[in-house]
Amino acid sequence: MVKSFGQFLLFMQSMLVRKERFTVLWRRTIDECVTIGVNSIFIVAIVSAFIGAVTCVQIAYNLTNPLIPKSTIGYMVREMTILELAPTITSIVLAGKVGSSIAGSLGTMRITEQVSALEVMGINSASYLVLPRILGAILMFPLLVVLAMALSIIGGYLAGSLTGSISAQEYIEGIRTDFIPYNIFFALVKSVVFAFLVSAISAFKGYYTDGGALEVGTASTTAVNNSIIAILIADFALAAILL
Amino acid sequence: MIEIHNIEKSFDGNPVLKGISCTFETGKCNLLLGGSGTGKSVLLQCVVGLMQPDLGSITFDGTVFSNNKVQVRQEIRRKIGMLFQGSALFDSMTVAKNVEFPLEMLTPEMSREERRDRVEFCLKRVGLENAGDKMPSEISGGMKKRVGIARAIAPNCTYLFCDEPNSGLDPLTSLKIDELIQEITYEYNITTVIITHDMNSVIEIGDHIIFLYKGLKLWDGTKDEILNAQVPELKEFIFSSSLVRAAKRIDDETHSGVASL
Ligand SMILES: Nc1ncnc2c1ncn2[C@@H]1O[C@H](COP(=O)(O)OP(=O)(O)OP(=O)(O)O)[C@@H](O)[C@H]1O
Ligand SMILES: [Mg+2]
Image (cartoon, rainbow over all chains, first blue to last red; front, side, top):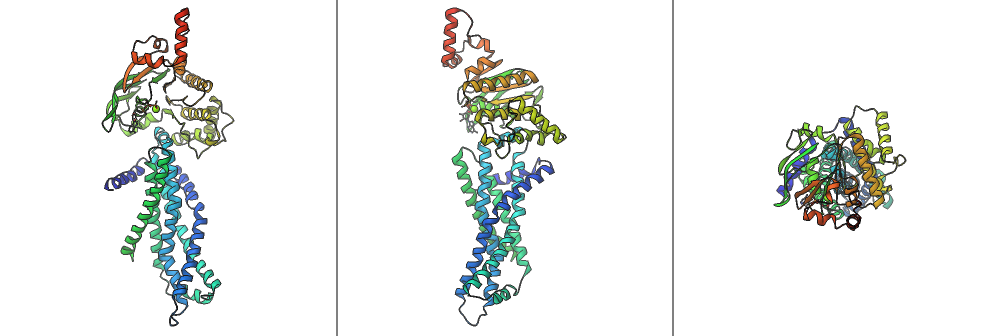
């Protein structure tokens, strides 16, 4: 554990020495933004819309006390999704999608000697392959999280109206009550931290794959596992520090 | 010329290279011959710097490579072209992009047109002028090796390393690949090192052959000398090939010199 953490730090360091030219790094980062960001929009949209919808319906089910105004449902959906559900669940979904793809592609490149081919050309393979993926994730996760926040709130709105558990007007009143902009900032900080954790851990696992196709599969699975655990620990730590 | 002096390498206390010294000569095809697991790939990886030897030194045309400053190593690496055992093409890029890649990364001063011309020239040189737009997954193993060679020679390499260029290829294709490597070596007067356990290659292109056995160099010489070598391990290795046995028999019976070709 301690040893692999040390290895991880060395890996991060090796990525930052002998970097490639800025234009190359920039072009690669844009490519990665497309793979990480654009290709994940669909799954993030589906997951967040449904989470918003389910949250709304369940809160409505639990709130039977007539003394509490119905608009509280909207308020609670907003608070839960912005603070916790959108950043954390989105990142966990992305850990599965992006993490496994990073670990899988790097692992395949390693076992088919493509990493060695880069090294022989005198290219720092860690910085060429990994840095753009981490930067791409750090740029894309917050955008996806913002999308997720919006869609969960819309999902809640639709679910509330469709099931009749809360009227559109009450819901909107609820989501406009006591809005704290800091929460958005907090969620974005979380998403950046999660982006780094998912991409760096998955890259680390993939980059040091050794063996064959079987090990690539194992590396992907471990990458997703470790990323999710890291997300949850970081989630707790950030909440304790920043809230 | 590449000089290797007393290279040793072990993994977890298991010695794989036990003090190998040899030279790879310029303008010649230098063959590393030996059975499976004798450390040929490990030796090559030490030479190109993918692995650090535990002991010993490697010198490229008078410049020390192992344990030298990063800049010096980088300078030498830019002159190295390598063909990997599994070709190691970048599978997210087209064939042409693969060949262009080292140019793009290593010679930023080249203009786009110059790069395109160079890619076209290299693909033509290996006989693949029409495959530029294909993806690596769409071409055959022999074609992949050719693309690998084109990629290796694209930045005008001075040293060409090939790890088993003809493993997994039919005899005719592997002969063509061997001939291609030989032509390129003579044409550009580069130092070529080829790992092989194929006796056909040895007899075809072996200008300088180094025989490894269990991490030691047991013999070196030319293809004309190899059939008369008096090292028992080498003899056993050579004469396990039935073609060579047959050639030798004809040679002995008729004294026609077939075996020395
Ligand atoms: N990274 C490594 N870690 C541990 N042991 C290794 C490593 N690389 C090679 N070896 C060991 O070194 C020995 C020589 O391997 P090498 O790949 O050089 O053989 P080879 O001569 O190239 O064989 P082949 O012709 O089958 O490719 C083998 O016993 C192998 O187990
Ligand atoms: Mg080998």
